[in-house]
Each structure stands twice: as structure tokens, then as C-alpha cells.
Length: 324
Image (cartoon, rainbow, N blue to C red):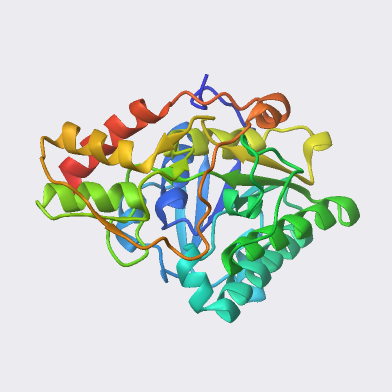
């Protein structure tokens, strides 16, 4: 179960792009704890130095400040690397609607730079972050790979485009690529601040400060919230996946379904707060319901998530209470 017993060749070197971000820093930490080497590449545009400062004394850790939009930086970062975990991207559906050109340059061209650099440097496995947003307006639940709808945001478009590049690199260039469609990841070190903050840390921070949170829409939208430990497991197991699974994409979630309004009241109860929410307009580009079929990842990656929503939420709440 989980990933803590996984074994890689001695001295394996992992490159984590976007390694100072929420998911990236958790990947760096997990790999270092397993005893392997980590090279972290981040331009600190959305990631935070504080997320990786705790690794500075570890001799297996190296930080490179650099931008994936610069191909030379990508090449330098990939030298001698066995596994790339490509998390570098700008998130947020609403922000992508405001900044389409930047999202194209950063998320698509940046990831393409990384794939090409990985190919040239002989990287064994290239695992990259995709998103449940690629399902667009496809109405059926659970969401199943190969059954996608019309895309609803530039962010979703960037992720779908990256998936197609992943297929091409596996098909033509011999790079084993594995796309992980994350479903609403949450957990320690996720940023609660700013207009585009994810909903769980934002609600927790506001409730701890006795502020009244705003729920976009009626609160009846549902999500397959996925705890960070499950995402770490998926990334590391993809590095050990067979070549036959390369060039494909996989839903990474727990396979559950939580309604936003229920999550809100779970948080008020857990934090001992009696604050009613405000309700605001729906967010542009948002999907109403999201729930993943994870059978493909189970079968081809050996993915077997340990953390259901309530177990993950309890851990996340404890972390925020200690760190906010």
C-alpha cells in the first residue's frame, strides 16, 4: 500500500519541475525521505522558497532557479536525471481565461521544452501533471479516460495539448511519458491566499480567522477531492510503470464525490465554528460535477490510494492549524 516501500536503483536522481509549489515540494520531500536524489527546478513565480527551505541541508537535494520556457535551462536541469516529475505549470481556470497567451507559453511550450530536454538527456521516465479539467462539458460520471467533452477554459486546453505531446514523444521519440489527470488535489503546503486559492485551504484559513467564506455558486457542485499522499503515490508508481503504459493518461483521484456545501459544514464542525457562508456567482469555466474512474491507474500503474477524503481532510486541518 502507498509508496513508502517502493524501490528504485541506488543513486537514482529525480528532477521535480515546479518543485517549490504545493505538489512539487511534497514530491521532493517524499523522494528525499526514500533516500534518493532530488533536483528541484522552479522559477518561484507561483512556488515558494519557504516550501523547499527545509531541504537545504540535505546533501541529496539541489535547487535550480530557472524557467521551463528557457530550453537551455531545461537541458541543464535534465543532465544525468533518471526520472522527471513535471509539475511546473500555472494553475487556475479563471486566471487562464484572463491570460491565454501566457498559459500557452508556460504550460504548453514549457512542457514541450521539458519533454525534448528529457529525450535528449536519455531520461528513463517522464511523468507530467494533467488535470480533470480536460473532461470539459462531458456529462457522464464517473469520468473515464477516452471520453472527453468540449474544453471550457484555456487552462484545460493547455493540459489537453500537453497530453497529445506526451503521446507523440512516446510514439516517435522513445520517451516513456505518463500523464496524470489530477482531481482537485489538497493537503499540506497548499496556498490559502489570493484570489485563485484552492477552496479547502481558503475555507480553513477564513474560518480559523473567524471570517465569512464565500461559496461560488449554490454549493451543490461536487468534486473528487484527492489528498496529496495519493498524488505522491501515483507519481512514483508511474516511474516504475511498464513501457506498455507509456504515452497514456490516467485519472488520479480517490474515486469519491464530495459536495462543496457538505465540505464547508464538515470544516465548520471540525474547527468548532458556527459561521454561515455567503454565496457568490458561479466561476467561469468551472465544471459542475467531477468524479473519477481510477480503474485504469489501478491496473496499469498499480495505483491503490490509501487516503479517502475524510482521512486526508483531518490531516490537512491539523497541518493548517499548526502552520497558519
